[in-house]
Amino acid sequence: MEKAETKTQVHSVKVELSVVLGRSMLPMHQLLRMGRGAVIPLDAGENDELWILANNHPIARGEITIDGDRLCVTITAPADVHDFYAVG
Image 1: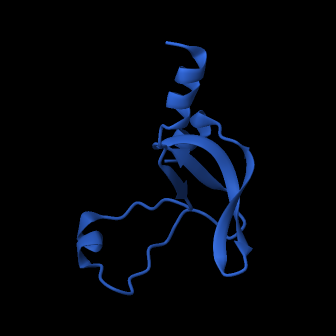
Image 2: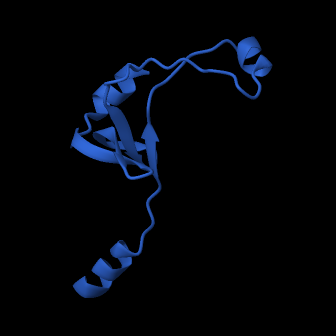
């Protein structure tokens, strides 16, 4: 396979990005009682960085920014995988 063909194939791979704002541990009975309007407390504060995941693998840290009427994520640092899993 030629280098250009490999590069084209790699560039066509889709990667799912997720953003983790925080985490929470709840007993199952509390989770089952939740309905519309329920509030789930997170282990993160207002100014804490969030995690950016690619296919469920941490790749970066970031912060929420607002661009007009859209929420965005600005990358602030590369992710330390060990920190991500230690938090949970």
